[in-house]
Figure 1 (spheres, rainbow, N blue to C red):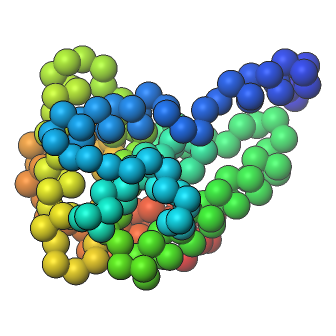
Figure 2 (cartoon, rainbow, N blue to C red):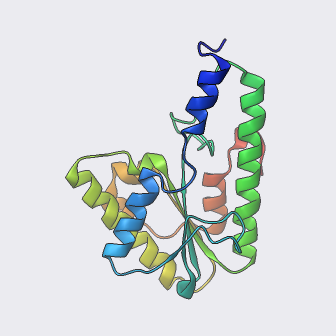
Length: 186
């Protein structure tokens, strides 16, 4: 049972941004400080990725853990009120995300998905570690000869030294990390 009136719930939902979110702005600031120049929300690409480095053939998506139903993340809960509606909504979101990932990879793009939980720490040291890992993953994808996809999540934020040294995920492993088996999206 929703404790808010429909008008108040509608107003709250209207305040949720889809572009220029705080996690997205952090990623953009890190890339800009490092000298990367990029396009934003390019409508000619599947899913309109948040950041596009065209010359490098690299797209970066910054995903909210709740709205994109991050597999295994505590923030990816399903509300108890209108449970069936939310399950259907989040299933559609996950299905659409999977389709866009496949279309980007089939078009020859490299893709980095940065989950909101990766950018969870707010201390200056945590932000610096996140920036180093993010730039390391961008450089690794840029240098990859074949099309690749990589994922940054809370596990990478918890061990930034290990995350910056780990090899790129294989395409299958990255897709496994992106697709929630509970929603049957494989």
